[in-house]
Image 1 (cartoon, rainbow, N blue to C red):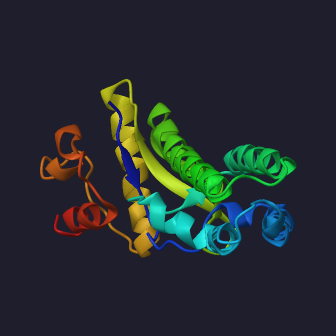
Image 2: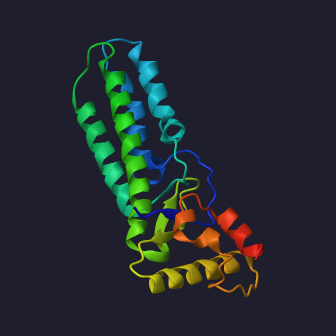
Image 3: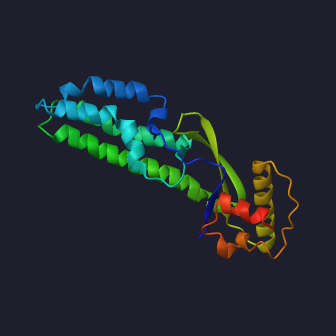
Length: 213
């Protein structure tokens, strides 16, 4: 199975991904301002209001990703459409019995977390269909700015393709560190860049391997 090497990215997480969508502020402003009309029990109102107010922050707490929160615009649109559809359906109803409305909000929240997790991970797994350095455009969930993910695909069909892919990796690392190295790619000392050792390879230990030879 192909593996991924994520290069040159920080792992910091922030407020959430859905808040980067263009309709988020308008949608959640409506949801918050109409929450008092959705339950017969007054105790549901502050609970539901808190869930909505902390939606983005709690999303990031629940993602538990080992990779940076970088999502493509296409997948963000898909997640947002699914969440808004569920929320709009919930708000179309009249008042609900005690406990029902906040429980439904929690269910939508959990589904949204899973959708975001899957969206981010699927984009990374798609990298396995490439051989060598690959880049795709994303939105940073840290500050909602345009960003990109650079990864290393292992789906090489021949030793020649693999050597070319490793050459590209070396060039990328040299450029990233702004160093000019003249390391021989065919040196037997480069065991850390051979397929059996790549499962746990990171940018840091790859760089360490290169600078030691």
